[in-house]
Image (tube, rainbow, N blue to C red; front, top):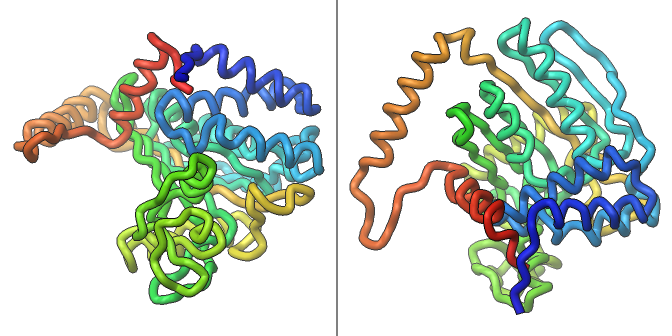
Length: 325
């Protein structure tokens, strides 16, 4: 039977569970906001679905609940940070907060954070920055689950990235894995006893499979073949190589080896639109673009949405009626 819970109720339940497991309350609140945000937007693979894995990692020491993010090196327009095995949410938010301070005087800034655990949906961070008026880009690497194009062996992670583009309180937000699908969605399908799209993964023998259990023990495919593979390599270099964090097999799965930190990395970029044009001109130009996109003739039975628009609509509905579980 369906049950509806307010976003605030979901946050509190997650917060209570994390605090009971020994997490610092401030850190736990950020994690709770991240997971509730994902569920409210309909991105269930990165919401409450992740809580059990987080709690197990806390119990076995894979998440350092007392960790504080430290600065490794810094310039006026860049920063390298270390999460020291803490919650991925705190590490990535600390990075974005540092960049938000820098971009006020530097116009374009970038930075990385290493030694993070699972950080939730990247849109959680890029959307916040976009609402403040900054173009935001965020990249993260993950444990090997994806085969390079032409291979049947997992080398790369799902390596997601997100782009937030300011447009008032409804920014355009792209958030996607470079694999055909996020690995968490396959775990979710297995939990629910559902089949998956056979284009998402290969079984251990290298054949496409619609069985999530075989996909979990096999490999994921890159989105759009060689195109997704190329983007995944770029994300690995930015979030892994350039951050000084784990690269490919040095990154652990959120669902395995809970006694060890994930050793993932993230790389962020913020751009102040005022460095290019007045805000009024930007708003006029992007509104024109949106109008042209929305005015395109739709396919029969289809509606044209901007990146992140469906998720924003889901969130608005959840604010009114709660999140359905």
